[in-house]
Image 1 (cartoon, rainbow, N blue to C red):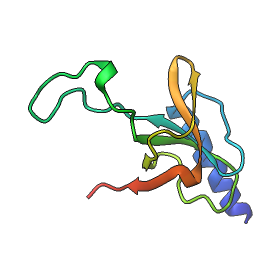
Image 2 (cartoon, one colour):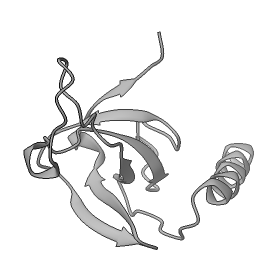
Image 3 (cartoon, rainbow, N blue to C red):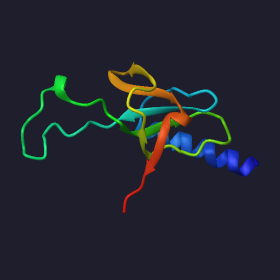
Image 4 (cartoon, rainbow, N blue to C red):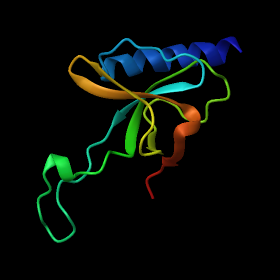
Length: 109
C-alpha cells in the first residue's frame, strides 16, 4: 500500500510540472482540461465560436482520492456534453466533474 501511495505522489509531482495548477479534487471528482474542437467543418467551412459544439473530450489533469477511480492523470477522455463545473485557473478553463460523468477513455489505435 505504501509503495502504491508513493507512486501516486510521484505521479502527482510529475504532473504538476506539466500543469502549473495546485488543485486536488475530492473523492470521485476529476479535473479536466477540455480539448478544443475543430473549428472547420468536413467541407472546410470555418465555424464561429458561437456555432461550435461544447467540447466533449478532455485531458485529465488531476484526480480525487477515491481508490475506485477508473481514470488517471494524462488520460484523454470523452465526457457528457453538459456536465461539470467550469473553473478558470491561471487564465485556463477547466472542468471539475464526477468521475461517473466520464463516458470513455480515448486510447490511441
